[in-house]
Length: 302
Ligand code: MF3
Ligand code: CO
Ligand code: CO
Image (cartoon, rainbow, N blue to C red; front, side):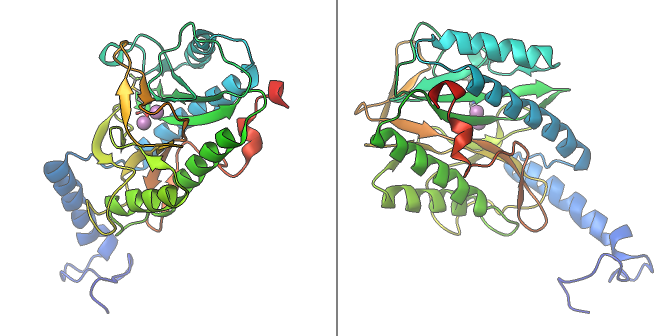
């Protein structure tokens, strides 16, 4: 038997006479769970936790598609807030953003040069706008976090470009997720690609552990160095949510203390999913087909 490749049903190498899975495999798992919590504050998720996060994830995606269906030129962003609030609550959930660290609404809506954390309000959506909607329902105590950027009306080429780069960035970040890989591999894959397209990656906001709470360790930067950072292991659940600017990476925060906008006024786009590290890769707990661009065009735009 090769050390390091002990089968679940092999006799445990400790000599107990039990199967490995009934003996030291369990202890090794418990040890790793404790190590990850003590060292990094990361709370690994078990099978039942994952099922609950998935349920919250389904609600997150259904909410985003509901928003997609009502998005139209001429509407105020606060109308999106009403729809999101009503949809989540009527499905037994609670919108996590509401009153989170003083955030006053149930959803973040970020238009064009707004990078993230836009507060829904009086802003009117115009023809050709790109609109990121970021939802985080809590369902039965579990959180799932996801966002999409929608085209409203007829997009110009620069809008299509930044949205495409943001989509591909999330895709590449997710592909880097597998046991044994490092957190830095995720950011590296994203940065390498986005910058090769002449876009830039926002530094101030990062992906994050999620599930038991809105924002848990670890932080997941969307830039970084291959091979650096915490090793990914099964049971980790975190978001990947690259914010990609068409121009420079610098941002400023508006007087509302929330809305982050590009300093140079250039367009910014973002897509987010909540992912689970599995034994052979990853699984999205807020799955949607990032290649299916028809998802991101409201019916009013077609
Ligand atoms: N949903 C955002 C994220 O992806 C966080 C929004 S915090 C809020 O992490 F307070 F603005 F809602
Ligand atoms: Co998030
Ligand atoms: Co989010």
